[in-house]
Amino acid sequence: MENIAVILVSPRYPENIGAAARACKNFGVKDLVVVAPERWDEEAILKMATHEAADIARNLRVFEDLREALEPYAYIVGTTARLGRHRRVFETPRKIAPHLAGLSQKNKVAFLFGPEHRGLSNAELFYCHTAITIPTAEFPSLNLAQAVVVVLYELFTSGRSPRLPQSRLATFAETEAMYRHLEELFDRIGFIPKDTRQVYLTNIRRFMGRLELTAQEVQIIRGFCRQMLWALNKTAPEGKTQ
Image 1 (cartoon, one colour):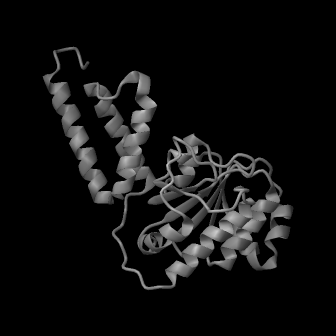
Image 2 (cartoon, helix red, strand yellow):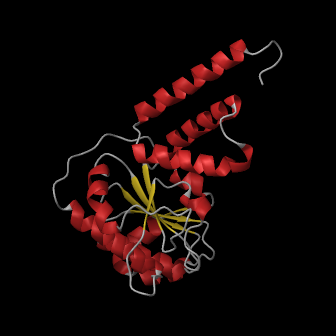
Image 3 (cartoon, one colour):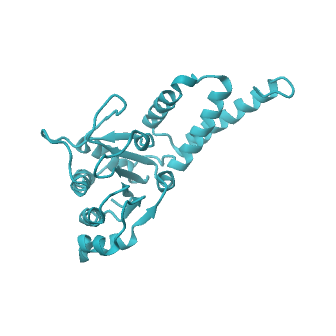
């Protein structure tokens, strides 16, 4: 579980941060990240974490910007209880755990958990390679710390079986740079319709995310984009780059 991270997005209650720290300690996860907490109370966090998980609580990292928090991670898994047209859920924690156990041997994998009252927004899920949902009965909403426990338990038990290590994937920062290059190229050639721009970009991210690109593959794609943009600029009429 060395390369696993738990990222809490805009948690409302400090006690839930502490309970999440305790869950991380239970399953050997050391990387706990909090993004834009609604209220910060270190005393309440440490009290809920208990003495055993105080080191996790004290060493957690806090960010105001989600994109900045995601930069070091190569694979990002969103969690959601709400299923809908724009919320493509591919797996349950149990189903995806074996794949992530192998992936995490050489790559940093982050699990995103949304705020207690609404979960992750579509904009936040936009940055995830995939999304998972925890199967429940009629009442689908779990407490934040409960959701962390379920996900980490499935990953922990799956990781105890031998897995073949996988290649190092591109980090979030590397893939974001690639997406910016692709957007620039697509805009240049008029590939993306203005009225459905966001839908196109989301679908492109979903497609590319499923490919699990390595850092080298991302560099190849960026090199292709650079060469195409150079060629387009070279052939454009003088004084005009379209």
